Structures are given as C-alpha cells and as structure tokens.
Length: 187
Image 1 (spheres, one colour):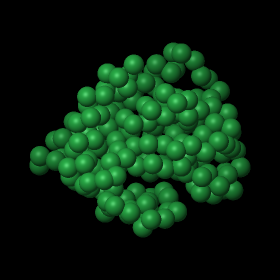
Image 2 (tube, helix red, strand yellow; image 1 turned 30 degrees about the vertical axis):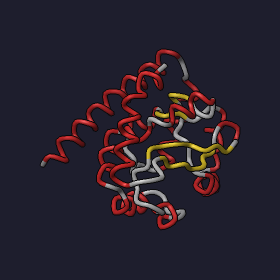
Image 3 (cartoon, one colour; image 1 turned 90 degrees about the horizontal axis):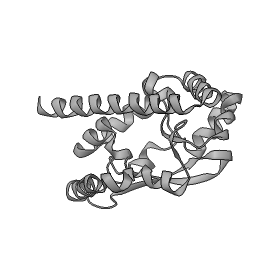
C-alpha cells in the first residue's frame, strides 16, 4: 500500500536521478538477510558511476568520508532525506526485508563483523529492516558493537507497540533531515 501511495514521488525521483546523473538509476547491492540468505537490495543511486568499485570493502568512518566525495548533487539530498531508500519497499514486498529490523549489511562486512563481534550473527533471526532501533537512537558513525546492542534489544523486545514507536521516530527523523537537507542546499 505504501509503495503504491509513494509511487508518484518515486517516479519523480527516478526521473531526477536519470536527468542529473544518467543510468543506472538504481543501486543494487548484495546484503545478508534472515538466516544468512543473501539478497539484492535496491536503492536510488546517489553516488557517481563506479563509486562502489573505488570504495571497495571499506567501512565505518573511512567509508563515510570517502562516500562524501563520491555523492552526486541530487544524491546528497536523497541521502539526507533518506528518500533513496524508497525502492527498498520492493524488498519488503518480496519478503527480503521488513519495515523495522536491523539494517542489512554487505556480505563482506558481515564476515568481518562476525569475526570481530561473535554475537553479530544473532541479527539473522529476524528480517533486516528499512529502519531499526539502532537507527532511531544513534548516528551512522557509531560503533557496530553499540548498534548490535540496540538490534538485539529490538529482537528480544519486539512488539506491535515498539514497532509503531520505531516507525514514528523514523518518520520524525526523516522529516527533520529532509528539512535540514533542503535548507542546507539553499544556503
């Protein structure tokens, strides 16, 4: 239903990406899902062509720094507003993801993280989500181990009430980031 309602917005964003940076319009990346099944996650492309090849297997603060240089003009707004995530509703519809759950990670990162943090595999008992407990409580720069604590708390305490609370907190955060992104572009 949400995908249907947002389809006009998604169509405009697709057109915007096509006009400003050409094809491909979508980023497709492998992610580790429930029970370790690898799936293809979709997003609107926000980076320059072949950026993923240049970024390699880097993650954490270094990835954030290097990604800034690779982000397109429209991509900055899409990332700030998180509108680049809208195509993941297709992954929800397919059953690869849920609206709420731990954010999915790339297979290479998952391997590294399970070596560094043995309990990291516990995230695989639920579907990954568009948003999660960790995303409503902390920023992108936080340590993976800290995010894992919140992911495991979500897994242990799942309830309809908590689910709705996370969705509401995410909506507030997205609106705030969208406004900041728009205001930031005008200054």
